[in-house]
Each structure stands twice: as C-alpha cells, then as structure tokens.
Length: 208
Image 1 (cartoon, rainbow, N blue to C red):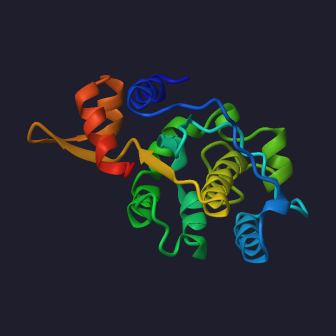
Image 2: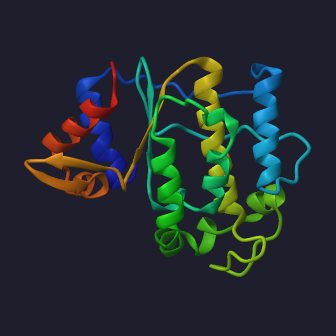
C-alpha cells in the first residue's frame, strides 16, 4: 500500500469498521440501461473487446457501509474526463463531478509526469483492450491504453456504486481543505500524515 493511501487507511480504520471484502461485478448484475452506459463509455475510449471487461481489481478502502477510492495523479486526464461526461453521472451524489472534470483538464500534465513510462503507459493486456500505444508521452494518436483502462475501470467502480447502491466516495490528492486557517491540499496532508487534518477532511465528506 502506497504511503498516502496507507495514511488515509489508518485514519479511516480508527473511525469506521473496515471489512476485508473485494466487491466485484459481472454483466448479469447490470440492467439494460446500465449496460448501455457501460458500452457507450467503453466504445468512446476505443475499446476493442466485444464485451467490456469488468475485472477492475481491488478497492482502496472498504468499510461496512461505504467505499473510499483515493485518486492520485495518474487518474486525471482526457480519458477520465470522457468517462465523466456519461449520463451515469447526472446527479451522482458521492463526489464532485465538475471539480473532477477540472482536475482532468488542468492536471493532465501531472498525470503525464507520473504515468508516461513503463506499465503506467501500456502493457500487453491494455493494448489488447484499447489498441497499440503511441510513443510514450504522445497523446496525439491512440495515446495510452493503460490510461484508458484506468479511466474505464474508475467508471466501472462508479457504476458499481449505482448498481448495488453502495456509496463510493472519491478523494482526490488535489482536493483542498481549510486547516487552522490555511488552505492545503489533501495530497500534502496525506504525505505529512497530518492526522487532525485528515480527520477533518473525512468528516467533511462522509455522511455516516
């Protein structure tokens, strides 16, 4: 577990009941409308498989009543913004969609700094799903299949929250909070393991 996520996990675990369950989703769980959202987003990203894959991996933090995903720099780019344009997010209640779209536009350069090399950019599995990668860092052509896969799987996680009516709260490292009169970013707070500030942020976001 990475440092920022580990620090967040410890604070959440002090406040809520953590469960060791890796919730998954299969096509049969979706109704016709939800399958429509899924196919539309997958195709918009250039998905190559006949049936969009739903094996989105483990969740970051799972509690008895809700899930938390910590979105770091690699999650914000043009592909994630495309998924956020889906009608799935009309009135979506668990994170600020418009703010996330802004992050995707304004912070893509930070995504590129972190995620233009190696497996962050492409691998055999992601190219099977989204086509051959462009040269590392080149977004003018097919771009990064790994970025597309990450954006699609983030969408699948959000879809899961609708299908099963389980809140999925997304925390971005770019989110800000006021702590002791100063505006500071969540990423910095987590890096410093500022427990009072982390507590304050969680209490401002979680409704349980």
